[in-house]
Length: 285
Image 1 (cartoon, rainbow, N blue to C red):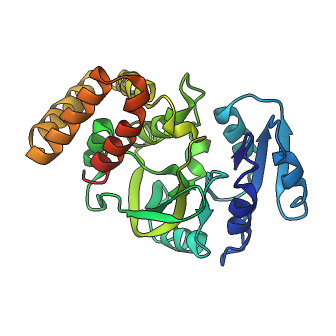
Image 2: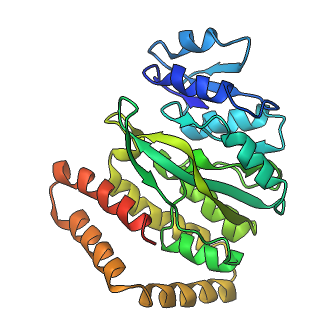
C-alpha cells in the first residue's frame, strides 16, 4: 500500500486487509513523506504490518520499494481509500493456483462514495476467452483495469516488467498492464465477482486533470508499440483498426461524445463529464 496524506480512510482500508479469510500474507505499507497523521496511524499497526517511511518520491518509487521488500509469490497493489471484501485475497489466490503463472487476475468492484455508501456495481468486460493478442488489442483501444482488484505474479517483476516512473502518475497502472501484455506475454483473467469497494472522492488523484491523463495514454501506447518489430506492430495496428471499425453505433457515439467533451468544454465542466464518459464506455466495451 503506497501512502501519501491518506489519514481520512486509512484505518478502514488497513482493517479490511488485516481481516482477510486468507492469512498467509504480508502487508507492506510505504509512507511516501506524508505530512498529515498517516504515519502515526500506521505506527499503531506496526506489530501486524511492515511500515517503510521515506521522503516523498512519488507513487512509482513507493510501489517499487514495496516490491523490492516483498517475499510473496503474488503482488497486490491496494490504495488507502478502498475496502477489500473479507474473502477477496482467498478468492484471488485460489483462482491464481488454477491458471498459468503469467496471468494477472482482476475482478468486478463496487463504487462507494465519501462515506462508504454504495453508488453502483461495476462489471468489467469478460474477455477470458480471448488469447493474449486479442486482449492486447483491447488494451491498445483503452481497456482499463482497476488495479486495486488485481493479483499480479511476482515473476513478472523478476523478468523486468517493473512499475515505471511517468510524468503522469495516474497512468502508471495502464502502462504496466500494457507492457505486461504486449512485451511479456501476460494473460489477463477476470473473476466475475466484486471483491473491492472502490471509493470515489474529491481528493482522489485519478479524478484530477483527467484530460491530461487521457492524452498521456496515447504517448504510452506509442512508446510501447515502438518496442515491437515492424511485423508485430503492423499486425496490431491492422487488428486495432478492424476492432474499432466493428464497434456498435452506441459505442462509437459515446466515444465521439468523449472527444467533444475533451476538446470543446471548459476545464471546470470537463472533469466530471469525462469521469462519467470514461466509466460508462469502459463498462460497455
